[in-house]
Amino acid sequence: MMRHDNKFYISGNEPMYYDVKLMFPVLLLTAIGIIMVYSASSVLAFKKFGTDYFFLKKQALFAIAGLILLVGFRHFPYRYFKILAYPLLVFSIILLGAIFIPGLGYSAGGSTRWLSFGGFTVQPSEFARLSMIIYLSYSIDKKSDNLSNFYIGFLPHVIVLGIFTALMFLQPDFGSVVILSAITWFMLFVGGVSLLHLVLSVLLLLPFGYIYMVSAEYRVKRLMSFWDPWQYSADEGYQIVHSLMAFGTGGIWGTGMGKSYQKLHYLPEPHTDFIFSVIGEELGLIGVLTILFLYAFILWRGIKIAKNTDDNFGAFLATGITTAIGIQVFINMGVTLGLLPTKGLTLPFLSYGGTSLLVNMASIGILMNIGNSQVKTAYNR
Image (cartoon, rainbow, N blue to C red; front, side):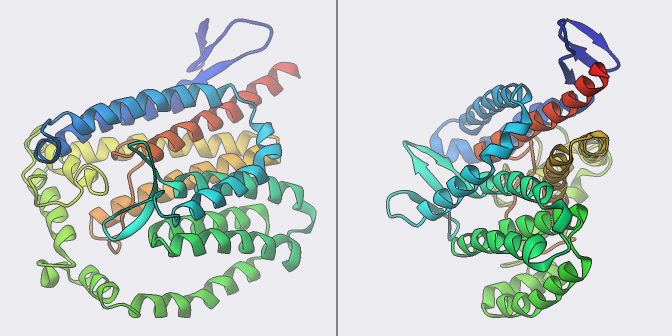
């Protein structure tokens, strides 16, 4: 094995490397996530389970399993996903539908978003996101000459998206609907689908989005609390108020590791949806900027891999994966900073959550495999 150009090469007839520029920030974020999950959840874990290491142990196991998946998918030829595109799509739909089977679906916080198997819970929407990206990559590549045709380039993809979003709405999981819709829209845009079709689809959905938001009192209050969280600090604005207080308390250098005040039963879900707030309080502006830099580096590498890939399927796949991570980061951070309405979404590689971490680590492995194909192409020329 030798190292060259920020990549680890494995000796042999063809170059086989691990992209350090991509892997290092991912592993560092995962390590920071394990530490911060423990810091954010220790009090809650001790109260509920009698040990402050409960979430720490599980997150560490998820990280080890995720690393195995990363390595596995790094060596799994990404072109095989063309064959698996439709089976993975059907499998994801089955998982989303299985949530509504009594005894399988697991409910928490008023939503049924998980499947329960022998003490473990799985969130099918995470699998659905990756399977949708694979399907779109395959379909856009296959139909590249006819994407401007409404019945070929636009309608079939929207129908598949509609099936996914309908099942997610029933959970309900509006956050996953927004992410999946945004990923689909962007991938179709990059693929060359008619901009007119894409813009009209957004304009047609706006009235339905408005009706959905005002059809329930709690959603109206949540929207109002976004504009003025302090006015609703006792109910719908409670999360945002305490999140902003966490960032304000952290200042530039933070209060110190483990010294967050807001995690002490003030900030809901401090180890999942609002772990960024705990980071802001304990590590301060310096910690926040470090996290932003690591994410920016991952997105930069993903964009570069997509741009430099000769194979269209690989380019679309890299684009979709990078977009998915970027949108998750944007929405989660936007919510915790009060820039977006409250939605329960994890922060990739940092938040507690097995399914999210495993899927994101697998996605990075796929990205690295796409990047390795560029080296092989150059090597064989």
